[in-house]
Image 1 (cartoon, rainbow, N blue to C red):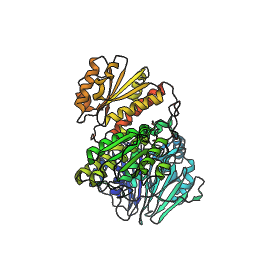
Image 2 (image 1 turned 90 degrees about the vertical axis):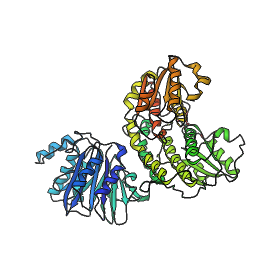
Image 3 (image 1 turned 180 degrees about the horizontal axis):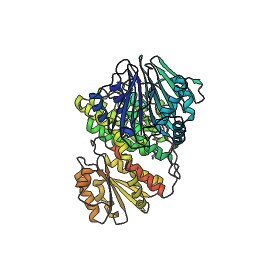
Image 4 (image 1 turned 45 degrees about the horizontal axis):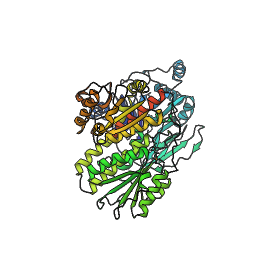
Length: 608
Ligand code: F6R
């Protein structure tokens, strides 16, 4: 959805504003704009389409102001054209807005009756005129915003820039997040910390109903009653997400939709995006170079994340990986290498078997690294180093956003290990980092496939059994897909490596059993295509999750093809996880199941 940026800088800010907007691209948008003050005068540039159109505009008509606001707009009220693009301006102020002003019609009629003329179809323009009316009545900008905000109904975040006010930005939040970044003599506003990552990691979040007045020396916060309040800045906040369903029917849906955002948040902690390098939050604590082997333990979905990580560590860092489900690892008395590293993966950080596996490894002289979502958990406390996933609280019992964040952390760890072990050039590292940065945007595009997946799920809901197939990193995704489907829809499902098909499961293929094949067009695609032929030859029903090239070259006519955006294959599982989750979710919803609290399951499994 829309992205907001505001900068009170020391030099011309337009380029920085666009750079920050680029980090919000993953939210999706269809026009963009920037406003600054040129010698006190409000000036703006806006463009339909992608940010590059705005950049072209700025290259011929540059903006020099030291203060500015910017916006990427995902159209709600009015077409995605330049006229409707933000910032919206009157002679006295410019404003950018994320969200929807529900009572805009009523307010527009009121303002029109007072002689205010509207140029656009947007709900945002009423905010510009509403505050301008207070300025026209002789109020200061701070008073004008304080008087106007209570008139606005709906969910929104706003940022204001005022004519002639070189040291003032005002932000407001109701329903949509807004963060304040504290720099050295510079201050920032952003839809999230990710947008501000290149400038500062000292972040304060506005609470619901808050608004904030910024100058270059700092920020003054007010709550919804206009009382001054303290909101402390902290070094990059971990997933400050509301534990509410918002507009979603289930927590699981909300968490599926949060994934571009939380993967973006997580990556900001593990990458130096500007330098094109991995930068682990715990520095050089791990001696990757000296390792002969890495041991990984986890349960359920976290185990599948570990399985994908095995492919990455082995291929990128040439580091052998031993991985096991924690309930087996804890009892099988595995010999562990001297001064080895054991890595435990857990969303909750409290899973009994994973914790027991960790203690076994610790007693056997291993350094312990954990990938956890809850930094205060027992597993985190008993580890030597913690790699936190910034998924925010995960409420749906079926893990979704924690899984993709675990993968984002593992991708970063594998690259760090590869660099340390000399198996990755600086150039290749920069290429992989660039690919990781593009993931939130690709995930947002994958979410757009939901209507097609919803249709598909109606048919799937009639199945008694479903087979999932994949090769390489798509194999653990096949396992994860089967787990997701069975745990929330109660349809029996199994995941297999596609190459194992003819060693047994092919006996099950008939016209009643859907076979979901996860197969991006990567180096193994042709092999998987042969397996699809084997299924098709036996009358099997194939649902293919692939990209455009895979769809064109699969050599069969699947019952349905889910066409994913093109991407580099290495970290593609982070994006391909989304249709897998949506298939399970939509099927379970169609069947009327309790997706957030499936029968017999618990979120935190503290018994073995
Ligand atoms: C499946 C799921 C479970 C958990 C497993 C481990 O959707 O959520 O399989 O992944 O219980 O839990 P954590 O990650 O908390 O250790």
